[in-house]
Image (cartoon, rainbow, N blue to C red):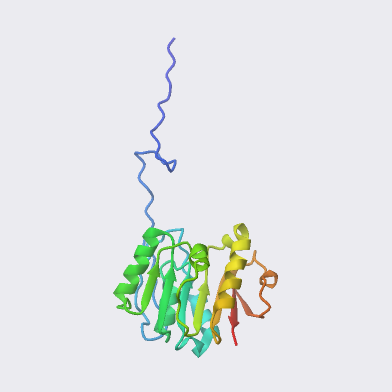
Length: 214
């Protein structure tokens, strides 16, 4: 008696059957929440590789930074949609550099910058943040406000690289710079190599550390 074999469905490289449609993630509302650009909408398609800082966390961070953001140059590492760097400009930063290695995300970031008519004062760098900083990027001598907000897993899976990056940024930042580092509760800020004491706050699931350079 003949046996019938079940036909295998052809599979794409990512493991999904060819005739299976990819799941589309609905766009999520994202906006500038303070400053002169308050209320401006930003593009964000809901890609899970991008984790924009929540509105309430972003508001809390800028309450911590306070008026110190004014006149500084924003450096938004692991830029994503650019929400936090653009928020800094809205609140008085004089310009910004965004670093984002994921091409589709960097493209969205560029569109957000263009939509807000900030291309003259913003640079979007499509690169790996770790390699980019090691090459010694050319940044203004104006004091910086630096945002280090990577995927939380980087603090666990790439701990040495993250600590080295944070240390290098702090060493090279001009006097009067401010640095904001966002992780989750798996990372102990007391374990990092900086001697400077930061102001650590918890906005679950985020844990934010803010440092000011004299």
